Length: 177
Image (cartoon, rainbow, N blue to C red):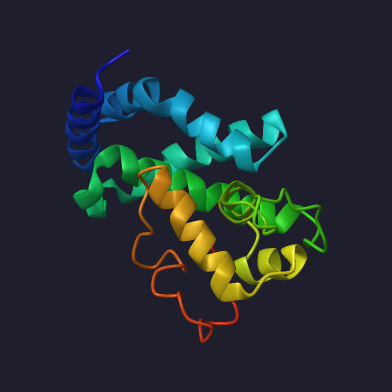
């Protein structure tokens, strides 16, 4: 397995080649990242056949958009971001709305950061729905999601729907995707 720096460098070079319509580079990027992409997609899209379809769609999108790839945070992060957005969009179209859930509670009696992360980020549910289902304010759900993402080393990106939502005046339809 390639080291993280090498993985990122390899992916960045491949994305640049894909932007010049190099089909071999797409095949190489697929070999390099498909397991990671599928792993992320499977966390959100539970059905293997559907997850594989979403994974394929991600690499089609890589091919179509590599020339305008937002790789300032890294090529791997860009591809995984595409995968997350596609998986969440798929999940939102195929799942029933979140109504109420049994929250895993921390010693302070509040839903754990992991539960908020699981439902909002991996589950693809809007933060507003997660907050309602867990019985906590939207601002608290946003803060817990931000904390959980930070602990994973994945800060909320601009446009992620959770950046700047620390206060109760956050947008009603804020999502974690």
